[in-house]
Image (tube, rainbow, N blue to C red):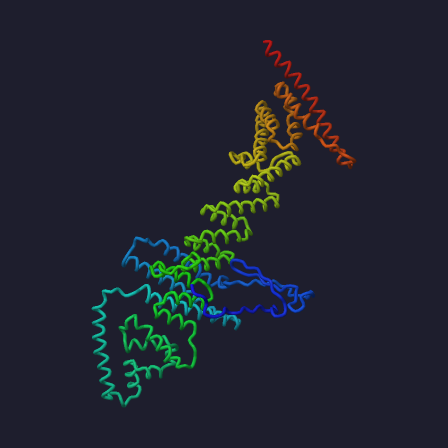
Length: 570
């Protein structure tokens, strides 16, 4: 794409003095943050008071217009339908579908323009009325340009109409000669108005220009001029007539407007110049993105690739989609536009979707579903991690564990499992039992999560009075070292009711294992210095537990040896 012909417009930020103070800024995908620094340009060593505000400069403010949002929403469906047009369709069937798509786009522009016009009329605030009227003018220009492009590039007359054109030319020539004869014979000399009308019907330029005020603009003059002077004009001659009509109408009194340059480029059949001029003149990327996409489907842009790895169609769709992502709800439309950009669409989607603020869980689930549908593994993991952290902060441990499992984040799953265990120690029961009971293969994500699942399984076995199974599982959790060392005393305490059962549950060998675990735990207890009262009380409780355990283990060992000896003897 060529460089801009002129310097870009300067954006003035009210309240910011860029001549006096240095500015700092940070770019984002759809906006820029600007503020003044604390340093003066002239006196760099002296700190001076600066502007206390941070300004947000958005590159595409039209996405915040309620009426234009309808344009974006309704055209989204037309865009998706166009992408699904069967590539195998050829000839008239394909062309008719493309023309229908073009007319659908124009109808959406027209509907928005009419609604904007009504809002402009009923606006109570004069400033708002002027703003809406300006938007009406822009939409009107968009409809005009699109209509012209549709006629010149999309709805081109088929070559089989030569006979019809010849007949029209013969009939028109006969009519034109008759009008000339009336003028030369001064048939209407007594009635100036009829004679003036006759000159207009002959396409007399001077007579047409006398009605300049009724024509409003040069392209109305062009249509009238061609209708009465050359109704079967060849496409190659259109630019000559357009340029001369512009020069005659303006008469050197004013310069061409941006719309004039766009229309002239269209009459030259210079599609790329039309797109370039529209990109500069129009206030958003909607028009050029959708028009270029349609022209690309018409096979009119195949030869124009940009030097940075993308073609013109994709570049403009990427820009438009990026603007949609600046809006809190329209970003969902932007996802589909990125989907249909084969070279850079996925990379751009990954970049933008990571910046969406996950204000609510509903919105997060929507973003997550989009990522999962597109196998965006890293983004799925990142979103799940964010939701897991939010759930932990809100003490929703079940939700936090569920998100960490979904993210396949072993470290975070370990952290949440520790919180579950700590919660159990404080309350004496588990929360979110359904989740823990149905962990399944997910418990293998981390050792701590495995322990949490197995420990809950131990409690379930105990509740079902499957004491032997519960004892074996409890012992294996300790001897396999899967249980955190800080939780060993809790596990040993859980063994007490099993040790006190009338029936011997732990065998002698299992009891020895439990004794080794207890001694290992107590022998490594840190030596404490001076302690406060609460700490001393905790140590007393711990000492009491240890003594009770040793006594229960000794009794169980004696019972187990006697029982096993009796079994051997029998």
